[in-house]
Image (tube, rainbow, N blue to C red):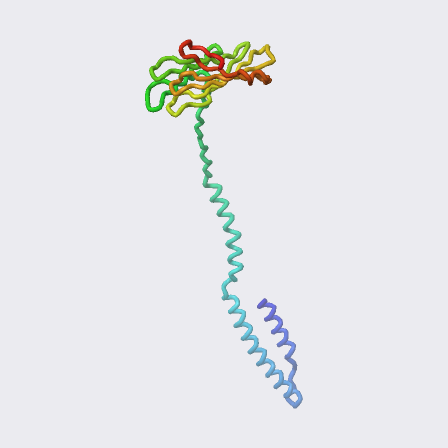
Amino acid sequence: MKNYLFIFIIGFLASCKQPIDPNSNASNAENDTLRAQLKGLSKELKEIKTLLEKEDKKPAPVNEIQEVKQTIAPTKVDQIDKKIPTEKPKEEIVKVKPQVFVDERRKEKTYYYNKSKLVSLHISAWKDDRQEFKLYDLKGDLTYEFESNFKSYSVSVEIKSFHPNGAVHQVSVHTNPGASMYMYQTEYTFSEKNEPLTKEDFTTPARLEDFMDNVSTWNKEKKQWEKK
């Protein structure tokens, strides 16, 4: 830029030089004008030179420095990333507890009278498709027993409720003869000493006569059921 500017100024000065005729007033006037122009150009030339020197001494713009840094930084980061090995995530080990199958049919159950160690009801585990239910009084004597059975026919015993003292209150027994079109259900009640009181028989499908004479009471002396 500076070279082109100097060439332009030198060419301009050269074009301004003309032969001077000392005997001509017009020539003197022109010479005075040229000298004035040369002085002005010389002053402007010095100012331009000073400005160019200041431009050379100015620091590079901030934007250019940032661009340089941005071009260099990724390369260094890439090199660092390649040198530093990345750690593999640790595998989490989860301990799984094995599931244990508990066959409720093999469990025995014992119920006691309230606030005592006296057995009220004992239910045996299933064995050969049979399960026993035994009721005891406050002296420990057996008062009554049931049996669930699943063979060619089925008998299902269900303890429905207990007395507050722990004695059995209600028992329901479902019987399915298998070959018959009827099924039977009997509802039993017991005292607070596990002594049998009543039983009521039902048939499914229901028949009218089943509701007319279907209640029996327990004869304690004979230890058998009797119709009312």
